[in-house]
Length: 152
Image (cartoon, rainbow, N blue to C red; front, side, top):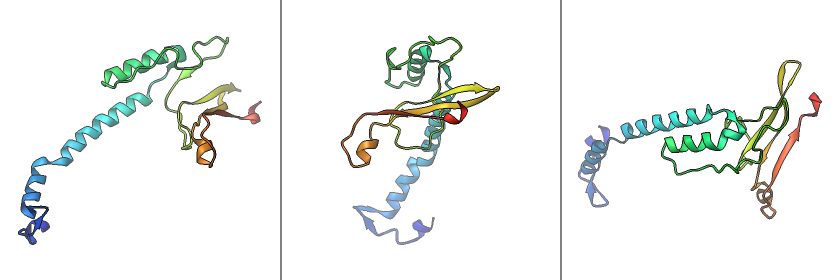
């Protein structure tokens, strides 16, 4: 309203201030953004809730992307581990590994073990294809992990 009461006869890029404000009011950007944000937040929350055996992950992810009309398909060969072949070991896919490290560029992982009925991270890592380049050297695709030797 303050702008409307000011010099509304001044011309900006061939339009008066009044014309610009009237058109802005008609578009009502805020409502459109709010609806879009709610949908995006719903999608992200649902994605972060995914947890499934690694052998089902490509199908679960592809179905999720299809449900939200995303043009993404996850190949059955995408994950390096395809089955739970080791007795007493469960390999789960979950996208909700809370990493604060920005150098990861792809999949991250944790290997969680039970020690005295308490879950502990034994191994943690992921892809960091740009890290070497960020340090001033030639970009080299890489995968790495850190071992928590305190629980061995």
